[in-house]
Length: 302
Image 1 (tube, helix red, strand yellow):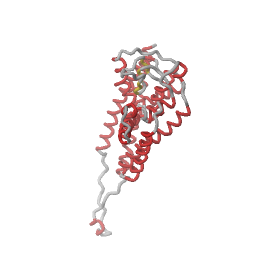
Image 2 (cartoon, helix red, strand yellow):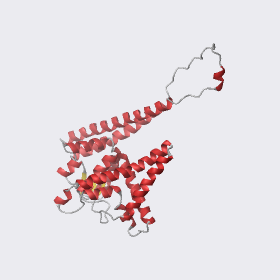
Image 3 (spheres, one colour):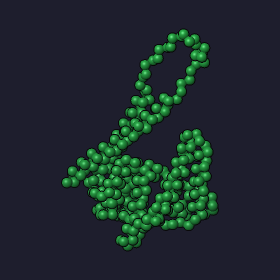
Image 4 (cartoon, one colour):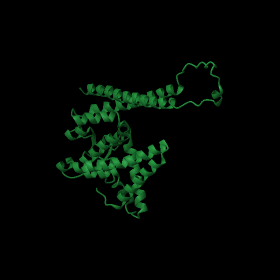
């Protein structure tokens, strides 16, 4: 039975990840090519002096763009890499039985193989090996961990008094509603999650320094990361068995909204820079600075 689950994981994971990346990247590249070809072709000024009786010059037969072939090759390479990651991860996950046959678990798996594949790669290549090297025991899946589709290990490889740490779908230090929130954050924000988390931490450190609040700088900055505000408001990291299962939906949706605003400012800064719209980048940057300054001056939640 386990062998069949592993084989199913390889087929599903590789197939979903490869197909999504290959067709998604090809579609994106095709739109880029269409936009480039739609630009007007400049004409020589001498053409305006041509006589009406002149015969039109024969047009050269359209040739396939070499950049189009290059784009398709790049899409294929990226899709193959994604397929290998998806297939390998799914084989391990299905073999361990971390996903359940319920709506949220299936949704989580589909996101793990598509929009959140970068976080899945971090799970497979970074945190799973770290948990194994640290010697933490794998915790057999239960209803909670299956709902969230997570690998759970008893010990946290970070040590140093940290209760638990989550990377992608791997929790080191035991399952709790706080860590489950991080799993879904990664699925919701996909490839943006890890870069924005690190940027938020760095900005918090900078604004704590700027406002003269230098005591326990890194720890206080951590407690003001937008994703940590969300996880501490929505879930619990410690307590009895019932408490760590509790999800506070009011805090969950409030900080989902605030975090979405935070992420949007960063995205709009990038869009403005790429599109050459300085005003958009400036306005978004003002919003990001205002948020960071307010958060530096307000108490931590965790």
